[in-house]
Image (tube, rainbow, N blue to C red; front, side):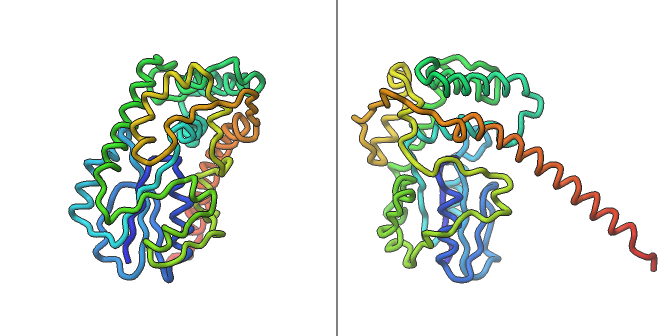
Length: 290
């Protein structure tokens, strides 16, 4: 059996991948990258990919891949775009600041201020410091980017055939796998976690939903509402519920400290890789000559 999981980044695709793989006998799990051929693979395999216009992982690319490669099961992984936006903003520095340390420190200071006084800074301002281009990004450009991605996802999901299954991050958190299990023909392993080898490049955050209510201000609701509604409606989220927390609480361990942990983990991974190469080279050079 060959299975495809597709979704936007920070929508829970990696967690679902390993929960499914643990429930399918002799299953290989493939995470990330670009769509690849798999005719040579035998047995069970699950492939997880993410949609990203910036990285060239467009729906056109996946549609072409699907036209060439058959899958026995296909899953679109959805998540409330408001929660996804919060996770995306905080995950920005998972590969390290590299040449953008000034931007990182500015972004971090604003997040720390948001923790102390949640009403003091709108969420969209934090997002404007989390881009990959000029910063801070103008509000109009930021919202237009969100609107574009939301519209693209809405159009893609709206045109999915009956052979697809739409599964939500929220159902995964609730442990509601009954319908998915029926579609798959086997039971997902609820307790399965992302392997430690994969966790070296990924850091889990809250494993919850609805946190956007602590981050959004009334100004954010007005800005993001029109952008997100098309996708929310297609998936079936309550488009009328934009109630924010009147007494928001943003915990540092899930915000600024999380951002710092990503940068620290990235640095440690680089050191680990460097030491592995050095050790491998030393071992090789110390072998006796034949």
